[in-house]
Length: 236
Image 1 (cartoon, rainbow, N blue to C red):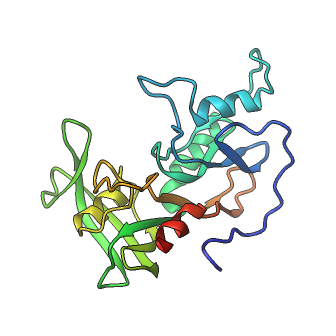
Image 2 (tube, helix red, strand yellow):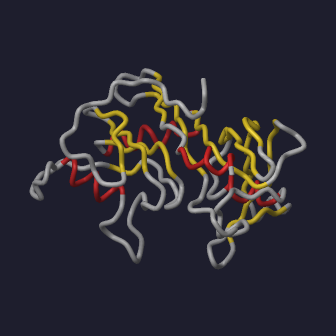
């Protein structure tokens, strides 16, 4: 399948789509969305209401602040990472999804600087966090936690490469750290890479996730089309 073409899936008709989010799937148990880059998954010390969590709580309550309906955070994406984000509609379903999370398959896409000698492989290191909450690789197993990132090069240009990434572990910022470690940082990464002029956003996208539905226990795959900006950057 062309990575820039999404699988044709019938999406539920919704009158009021939350800003910055596209609903991929919804039923009584879960809510799956495609989050745009620049939107927080949940609140932090500076931002309370401009988040995916806040917008989707309003959405399920249909504008009724007294409604008891709410969503539950299962996982999160960084503010500048776009793509598939899963929420639960009950505490029970949240616990189930989080307990099973390591058994689910997550696929990401990124545009990285440069070209890789090995077109397919696994990046591995122990990741730790410093006092300013920035992740780094270490050889000390007592300090860091093992992180493994599988990758495959899909396209190359003179300056950039599009890579498909299998998230084999779920450490904070592991994709960004691992590619920065090999001097091929994710394009647009101002924290771990080179904030090159003219790159409008972090080019990291959660393209798909395969989970076991908390209600039916059936396997389901949800996909979010790779942003067209990724191809634009490759073609520059």
